[in-house]
Amino acid sequence: MSQFTGKIAGEGFDDLILPRLGAARHEIVQGAAFGVDVSVIDIGGGTGLAMTSDPLSWIPSLGLAESAWLSVHLMANDMATTGFAPMYAQMVLNLPPDAGEHDFKIYWENVHRYCKAIGVSITGGHTGSIEGQNSTIAGGGTMMLTAPLDKILLSNRAQAGDLIIVTKECAISSTAILAMSFPQTVIQKLGREVYQNACELFYQTSSLPEALAAAQTRQLTAMHDVTEGGVLGAAVEMAKASSLGLRIYDEHLPKGFAQEQIAALFGIDTRFCVGAGAMIMAVKKGQEQVVKATLAGQNIRATVIGEFTLPETGCQLITEGQAAAVPYFEKDPYWAAYFNAYKNGWE
Image (cartoon, rainbow, N blue to C red; front, side, top):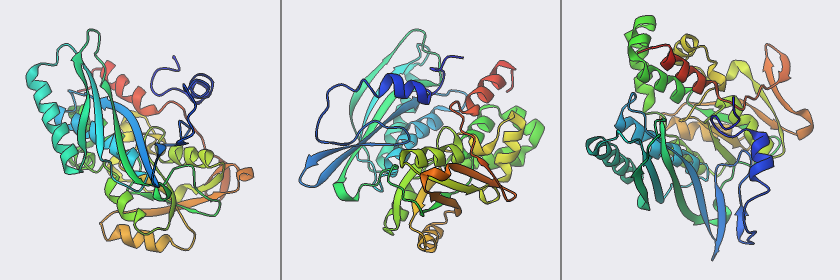
């Protein structure tokens, strides 16, 4: 399989991307880096411009309104790691040729609605269709915000001794999307209740509310949203970006019944699968109860799963008292699970 199937692998990123980033400019506070969700530019006057880019989803089997939700909120989740809400968005759409005006109207009306709900203004982009475009990705977008430069959080600023909090549960988005994309199979094999629970999980895939609430406590040093690689992958990325190690306790990882049932059906492990909606937070030791209480006030589950350590300890997963290196998979198993189910005719 090509390294360009899915997100580019770490080696490709280091060898191909990082050495070739155009002109060097002194006002770049944070540029492209492994495990870092946003870039930050010093625009003067103590103000920073934060930006992030992500693919835009177009998944007819899931639904066009649901695709619009993912398009907006996966970018907004990255922006949320700064501790501030996104303000502006640019959208580039390369739609499949069979996307008619009616379909596009549904999709774009919902993109507009979801952006408006979180205070994001769409400032421009590009819209068109292209032959041969038949994937679940139909372009890309960029979100931006401005905020006091010294208040913007970055995922590479965790400190040794910080506790690791994860919100909600593992594999929220991947299992919800699998269930909603193959509803008949899930209902037949797991029952309607599991399917309905998974559908309810879908609209928990925004982590903006908890990020903003937790940031207000001023007890966080860094945040990283959970996407490809799941909770464990996100934690490892955050540790490596911060030049740290970590220790995570497997029995503390928050898991949901519906997610575990669906993951088993599709042959994947919830700890390592796309988990949009969950947020990893580096919290100052001794202040975890403040953060947990704040999130509880928003009805958001928050669990301490471990701590960041000095780099020489490495990234450890503690299972039944035994330490081992945390596995890190550069290819999220969700993608193979989705396309295998599609190829096998699951409905």
